[in-house]
Image (cartoon, rainbow, N blue to C red; front, side):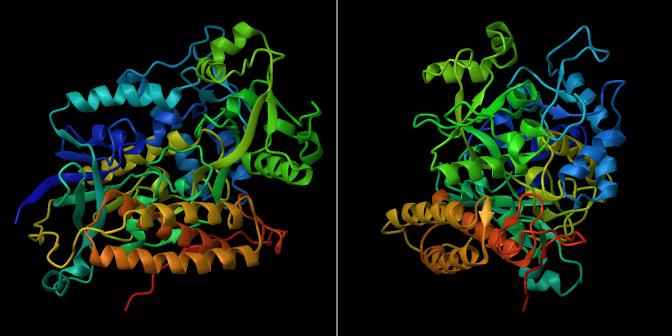
Length: 533
């Protein structure tokens, strides 16, 4: 029986997990478990930037108001105020860590601030058009250099180890606790047992449940599914944000065209060259993402289009190369010169606004278990996340969770049993997993996408039930693999999305139902709680 012990076990390698690890490292022994490499998380893909009231013409209150408007009445007022008031200090922490942001000596802040959909002023601090990459690379250097931080790449968490699964321990206390997790070492093909004073879910969102997404392949809802299986409450999973502008090209997998392109004057057009956003909203291209995504979806379906076009060619070539170097270079590789022609775009699943319910310190229903970043439902995003609030949420809650963990008393933990593989064999037909993965993503795209109906949701639910039966049979009889674990998590995440959507009998924010097109007078969260025997 070999247990790996750490003060804090962080599952996931995005900005939330990195920021937390660096906050804890002076005081705690930390382990970061990541299922691919240290730099493979979705945070590195973030282009736009980080929202914060930094200029003299802005304020946290104004930032909070914009967040609440985008959130369609579901943002938690206290949490929104807390995050926006701590935004500036989060940015300064990154600067102190060595992150370089794009400067502007004419600005009262010394930085170039851009404006994105839903924001009333320029408040997005950025590093060119690859902010996430710049932030992550800086923090990775710090993490690799810190003696108190262990990083285990190619390790995927299977499930949390909770007190109610330990009969001897559970009988002594009524408080449900988390003691660590079972983790598959993908390289060696063996399951390791990790014991920790505190465990943190920081695995990102579940957008890979859809056929088209701006997310990396790692976004399979692992933390949300593990939290659900451990009997944590899950909230607002119906609110999946579809980014309006993903590059439409057969050789451009998941490449995002930043919202900042529209913020700097980009116009959405039909193939005829005619603008269409003014027909849908008075804010036109700068309307919140849910409105823009629905407008594009409407025009594509109405006219039988494969895509629409985003045109910023009226700006100078030097401006575009300076402000959007990554987008300019990638499009040019694919034969699209954004200085002279429009960019073909389609909506794609982008961000999971719901997740594991937490308080303002990132604490979940399970004692010693935290959830931060896209995995968590904090109440900040409501029914629709305001652009560039995602990296901000990671930073603010990583700091809050870090302070809470530091102040937790050390407890004596039970000895955890090894993973039992005595009654399983190797799978005989791995192709079944690939087929199920493809089927899931296609029917989720068709039935649980930007526009929904009750009948479509019911169809999706029936297919999920069939897939779950097959996956459970696989999980029970065969040795676990990374593909099987991800598929299991995707099916759980899809189930949570569909269940939540079926419970919301209205259209609000990112959830639009043709059967319930109006909004109810009172906005309420959709909270799912697992039935326990």
